Image (cartoon, rainbow, N blue to C red; front, side, top):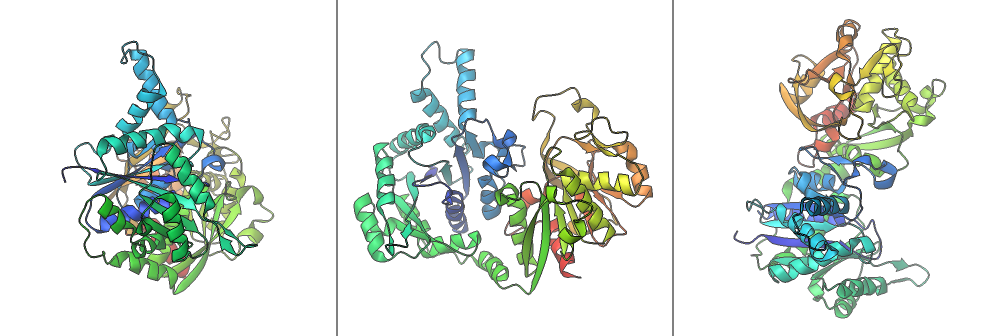
Length: 534
């Protein structure tokens, strides 16, 4: 394709309307039609990336294969498209300004006054186009974070306005997602917020080409016609996105609403027969018509906000569907678990997952959970810090190492079974000591990990700082906890398991980042399978 096509998705009226899901759904439909697509997210906050943000602030920090700490929407992009994203797929205001200021300090602007326009907007436009270098993609979708009218979003909106003018009408489409609320007292759906949102966008110089109306109630043709008339949009370009039982139904909903057809026509691209979406439909059919049902405890310290564990939750959707199983996730706050109530809190669950995290808060509850799973033969999956908690628990209660701990929590522990490796100890700046992104792991034949993956070498994504202390390797193995996966280059421990247990696997990496609709992660698939087989 000679010219790369661009699609921009903005949101209005309120946040959390699901721009990421709509963007991923449209991308999935275009991909199913044979187009090479990718999605990027432009985030208006000043943090350089979400890596230092508390999950309560921004939900999960998603990590790409090349080690970028990004917005959780990139997880949706990968889960829908089954194509890895990268550093270039997430841009923040902090990164934009950092780049511009660095250029100014180097003298790149030759003494000119550096301003939002043109310097910041030029940097944004450059980042948008960066993904298209080498013509790897036919279509690039860009989701603009925040809500139209926000002060911090204005440079992004202006950049889109300029790009629409520069690229021309058939190379660029603007989609605006907005809310049509239902007022129960009046018994009516109200379009006025949408009209005001579009007006706000028009004041910034952008006429949306397509409107997607988020609503909890079905909207009739009269509402669509009214919105089209007062927002100066073709009636067929007004698309309704009402509530569905799972986010994975949204692509099929958008296919029914002909969103992909409308966009292709506006991009002057051929519109052929609708894609059958057979694998996708089969996935949803299994998800909605399970033959089994299990309850899995997810033990973490951010469980009040499920978005903090978004990738884990979605991994259970994928693995549940693969097993024709409905996975009910029971969110259990690790601070609420102690030695006296563990049996009451955890009894009756088919499996236990100890979630990742940082810091000391809630750590004791995670350690107690690992002990309960080990002693009661309950299927157990420990992820990142969850793996470290399983190691600490085993050291204390099996190896009789009283006070064994991670030096992250107790720097003076007599038994530092989890510790920084030597080259990390002199570094103090957050992020620089982290293992981030994809690392290789060699599996030991004959172990559960090898059985699950079915191959000797894998690559998984990491986001952590502390490691298993290898000086304790032999002692752990002698007492029943073995290393079944190890980094072939650094010799760092990646997976531990207990062969005498029915299913006890703990991993230093984050398998949830790699699970997609069409490729559910084997660890989750096997874990769910074991939970079913009581």
